[in-house]
Structures are given as C-alpha cells and as structure tokens.
Image (tube, rainbow, N blue to C red; front, side, top):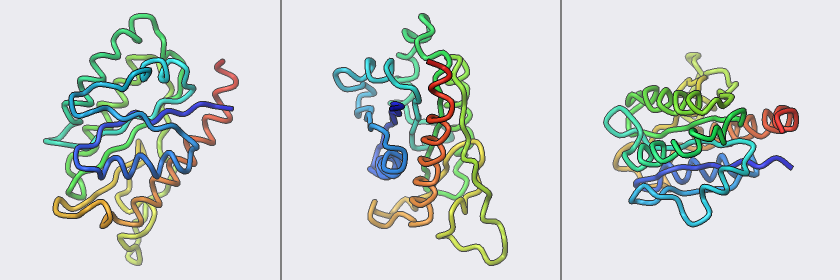
Length: 187
C-alpha cells in the first residue's frame, strides 16, 4: 500500500478543509504544521516513510505562510541526506481572491520539491472555461500545476465553494492514482 502524507499549514481552517478533501480521495494521512511552524511528534518520520508528500499552505501576501516556510527551511536536514529524493510531490493552496498570486505559492512548493529531487504531479484536470461554466464546476480556478482554491475572506469553512472541494477530491484521486502507478517502481 502506498503511503501519502499531506503536510499543510492552515491559518483559519480553509486550507485544512482542502487538505481533508485531498486526504479523503487519496487515502492520505494528514500532517498539520502548527501555528509556530512545527510538525507534531513523529512528523519527520512520517514524511521519511511516505511515498508521496503533498504540500499545502494558504497564500498570504503572494506566497506561502511563514509557518510553511519554516517547515520548508527545516526540511534541509532531509535534503542534506537526500531523504525525499524520488518521492512523489504535489501541492495546493487557498486564498481569498480568484488569483491572489496563488501560482507563486505553488511555484515555491514546486521548487522545494525539485530541491529535494522529487517528482511533481499536477492536477491533470481540464479547466472549466466555457461560457456555461459556473463557480461550482471542477477546476473553475483553472490550475494545472497544482490545486488552487478560493475562499472569500469573510467566508467560514462551511461556506467554502463546493466546486473547489470537488476539485480537491479530484486532485487527491489523481495523486493516489499516480502514486499507485509510480511509487512501486521507485522503492
């Protein structure tokens, strides 16, 4: 059985809800980065044992949260020993506006994965970009390189867009499928 770990930071709960949807569809394990930017006890060991690591962070001020950056900096210990080399990687982010410079956050995660020698998985989803498209369609935000979701700044986690959560589940399913096909050959 492939091991998928979703390591994420969530400031207000929206990114956590996206992480849960990805985990639900991928049978992945959630690993939350706390408010101080730390992993829980045993977190680094979980990542070392994973076949796939999915990174998640809100986009704040055009990039990942400082808590996620602290985690990324701390991953240099794994980098030094090439512990994550040839693992599968993917990423997701949420912000309050439709664009919100989310691509900068995904690029940060992609670069982190490449520093570690990982294999990146995009969404594999077509965008919903016709005149008939609605906000509740899968991949309405139109991202290919990683999962992007949008939640208005005054919306609760219960008010998140159903289409974005459906997109998160589709992304989780894609991550699981790629992991099942590729991870056995990398072990």
